[in-house]
Amino acid sequence: MEGRLNQHIENSVQFFRLRSQLLFAQNKARKEIFSEIIGESADNNHQIRLINRGSNQLLQRNFIVIRKEGLVGRIQSVSPYQSSVQLIIDHRSRVPALIQRNRVKGLIYGTHDGIEMRQINQHAKIKIGDRVISSGLGNLYPKGILIGWVSGIQHKSHELFKTARLDSAVDFNQIEEVFAILPSITDSNLSDEFESMVE
Amino acid sequence: MMRLFSLSIGILLIGVLMNIVFNHYFQPVGLKINWMLIFMLLLTFRHSSISLSFLGVFAGIILDALSHGYIGLYGISFFVTLLLARQLIKLFYANTFFALSLAVSVMTILEGWISLSILSMLETELNQSSLMLTSTLPLAVLHGLVTPFILQSVIWGEKHFIGDTA
Image (tube, rainbow over all chains, first blue to last red; front, side, top):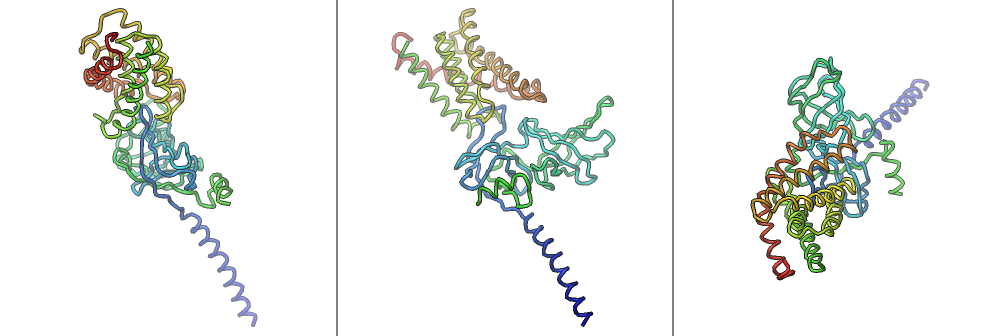
């Protein structure tokens, strides 16, 4: 009798542990909203694209935009039926990132026609072809989204940091459709606003 | 004067449409031609009216809205460029296709430099020299190449809407 009770308690503990793990995993499975590119900035100094989804489709400022190839950018502003997306190649864009192979951190800067990873530790060993993913620092871009590959490394002896040129995973001249990520319940800052809006 | 202003507004609206629609399909070497700037420069070179400089502010603000950047950036750069263009035309006679193309190219470089200077004040890590080389200079060449065609349409518009005063 004592043995069977102990077994039930053990099963119960296991159930709640697994349940919380499954709920955590379920929360992390983000909902994505399919959007089409319907326009772009009219000048040569900004890299902005317009998409055909807005606040009526629950999009908000700072939601992340991706494609299956990798990270595209973030939503800069929303109106009821369209939003403007700041691409990561825009010179105002900054994305915390890390090199997947050795977890070296840096910051992705847009250079208008491409991207660079700057503020890399000068002693870090990076190689051409290394995959670069978002690091999740700053709580804006989710961790683990592919950004690109290292295509060149710059480091001068008097500089504190290395800079790596990257080949972007996404061809920004060819994009026609993107996915906007709705934050999961566990994504703290954004989800508060999101939940209140859903309610 | 009123006819010139009406014509300028009409041409400006055509420039806005071309910036929105035409640039979506036509981007030589990946650059968007600034039709509004070309139209406004040509009108300023041909008529040298101060009202065109102020209309340039309006054109610049429209471009600011379309570019989703800082409101006022192109408003300022267009205004200063058109004011200088108005002074420039007093220094030499530019009414041939080649001279106007050259003048539009030079003023495009100036406008690019002004807008990038303002941007670099707002964003400290902007590589202004790189953008000047990769974006503004090729754009100035493109503007110079399309100017004769735009000039033809402006002359056509003047003949029909201003008549003998053009």
